Image 1 (cartoon, one colour):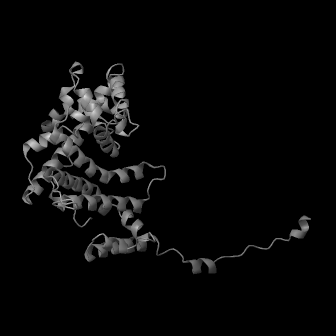
Image 2 (cartoon, one colour; image 1 turned 180 degrees about the vertical axis):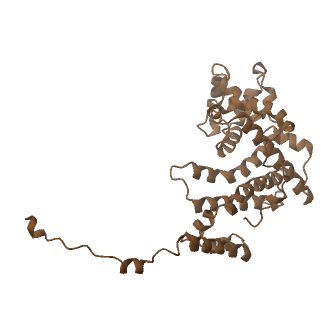
Image 3 (cartoon, rainbow, N blue to C red; image 1 turned 90 degrees about the horizontal axis):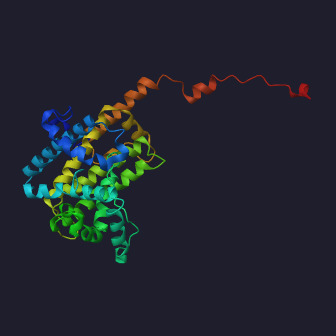
Length: 322
């Protein structure tokens, strides 16, 4: 198990089906269903409720843990960010409104984009959120920031009645910071989306890189340029760590991950040490690999034994064939 994994401290209800307390969030999920057209046939309502409960539990746990470290966020800040990232947020809602209004809002938005050549982008359509693709959150937020001028112009027209989807100055500032945080997941998501899917030992390394990057944000008070990191961003990073470590729990449940890394020529046992694993944990990995070897391979004949047992076939007299 990962050296910083604290899943055993999670509330016992974290991995259980969410009950009545979270049914109220179903309305938020239903409001976002139209924004996820390609996943309606694969993601069940029950799964959406469950996922919402998991997110709420981990978020509350992250807020509590960071508060102990002196990193606290206000209710106003939470409300501010909730208008940016959830499925039923202002960002998601505006993208859906523009997409669904093919005869009015969509052409008007395209006209506004084309009238602003300084944007330096070919994008004229806002990306949609796809729950099965981690990078869709980044893409959606990146589009919103890149096209902020035409979006502000569109929502500023009273005839369209889109004022509810306008972001405040604080939300625009927070959006930029959040986009930088989401960029941590971008390369990994694209790697798993390629035709050449990463191998087992590569997937573990990618997950480890995500955790290390998130931990760097979580534990930093300021960015390299000296500007302070927002408390909400640090809490969000910690929340991401908890989710990533939740998946990393599988590492300890399936020995194939450890074996794949140890057998990888460019990694071997040194990889665990370079990632900060303790000597005790590395010893456990070693014992796991040796145990599997003893149970599955040690009884098989070696190359020398196989060679000595080899019986050469009787030579064929080719003369008789000609």
